[in-house]
Image (cartoon, rainbow, N blue to C red; front, side, top):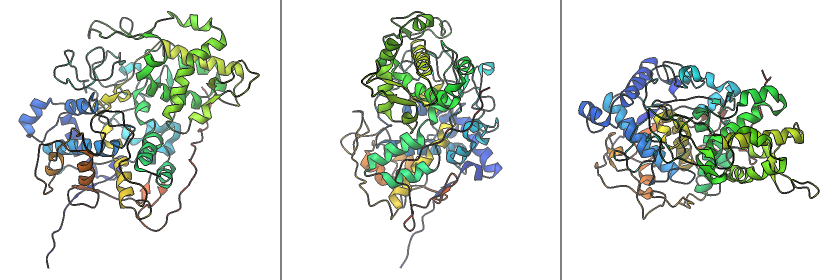
Length: 508
């Protein structure tokens, strides 16, 4: 009786790589971010995929990848795409993952993680002194520019012709990454590892599990790195003048604001230019502007109730998005029939007076109406930032654990999706943009077919203990600083949602 051994690559936490293997990974990643598709294919062959193609693929008009089950198939598929490309440069390169849960212990000092070293991914706390561009090896990464929308017709384009979104009025040609929000160094850190066990212990369907990991573990990953600058108001000055508001509360609103900024014209009456001219226009000449107000001073002159009325749709959208557990800490609805604000959403906090709450509401209103710009991590073009490629494997690792776990895989793992009516979201009937080639090129026995795969096919190919998936993770025992093993025994897990406590901070 004979059996056939299967050899797979091991994905390890990036800090566990040897310095030689880590440098080889970064060198290969630099190649991907410094060559066009045509150049890369000519040098490295057909397995090479340039970052511009990866940006266009993730920033898609056609396909849905987020806030529904396709997140669990599409992002591992994207990771296989770039792993193919990395191995076209060096066939023995190690493709690592980043357990950012480890860095949750840094709290408000999250930007001091070793991953932001200049010889790794470069800083996250970049300022106007560098035009918010990360120093180091990825300083000159360019934003894909396609003003005629002919090279990437199925990608979302910003008004300048850069890949991004329709409200991306950033004229920069280069990658920008910062935790600066309108003059405030935002301090909200990474999700705590307890959220991982919470998602395992509280899901009732695959959709619930996905929503939990996207909204509670993934949470603010993108907004933390996108920043928001060239604003009409200064949040740093506001905090200096109003220290009782606290940097934790402002950091929460900063991250929420970035996530909601792509839909600002849904909540407010805005004039949104359809196009800007690169190299000619700037934030002063081409920007989404309020249809009602021309200066922040006009907002100061409005009565309190009207400023609250103007913000109601925005607060409702924030609570409906339900990202993180901070909404319940910092936004409430007034339930007091004797109050002029009864039934209205308002900033929350026993440490705030009514005057503080109204002043904060005005700040949020001004920031929405007198808009700024954000880096690519704030849009579907997030793959423009190389750090994207190590921060998303943790979710694939969670999905693999769920499928392998004798404790947790007895729940409802059917594809009970609630999508956005885009392609690539259904189990069958519509296809994803991925082909079998992304698996076959990495040494499996699959035929390198070119037919587009359905989610049913992808889910089967991504089976963690199957023969088609070309990699395994180094371990499932440790998630950040938590020891949580979903694969053995009956592991106790919390049934209540963990709440991140604000870190102590003394306002400067």
